[in-house]
Amino acid sequence: MKEQKIARGKATAVALEVCERLVKENLVQDTFIGGSLKRGQEFVADVDIGIIPAGVYEGGHAWWAETMKDIHFMLHTPKGMPSDFKSVCGKEILRLWFREVQVDIWAAKKYYWGPMCMFIAGSAKLNAIQRKRAKQQGILLSNKGIFLLDGTDLGKFPTELEVYEYLNWKWIPWHKRNLV
Picture: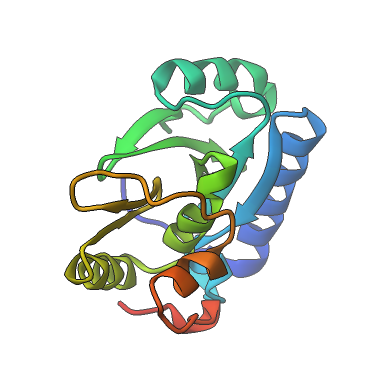
């Protein structure tokens, strides 16, 4: 499918409506609008939303499938536009179309909220640079947490700032994360 560019105003309206409906349906504890919108771009290709699901989140297709059933308004997708659980670059997302805008919903447990928000707020290039830099420090950094190279979980990071502080990095404002 050809990548479309959506004006910031329309994308913001879609993001806010999706977040509002997720909260109204009690499907989430919290939401975070990330991606190009968070970085202040005037035109975006899609909308990225991070969520802390209500209830127990173990990840995987079964959880997303059940969530899809609960999010009735999102099931009415225009013909020819996919809506389904996807694994994008090894990451679990719910990709759907709402008001003709591609929306990617990323889920994280509350204590991994910081790494996930950091991930969806950064550009792909910045994320690659940060993962490489973390690896040089002996750490695996992903949207699912912070780990030693052997996979040992380094703990809970409920805020993005805690991730930066742990790694001893200077926090980067969202509007400066637009590396292309």
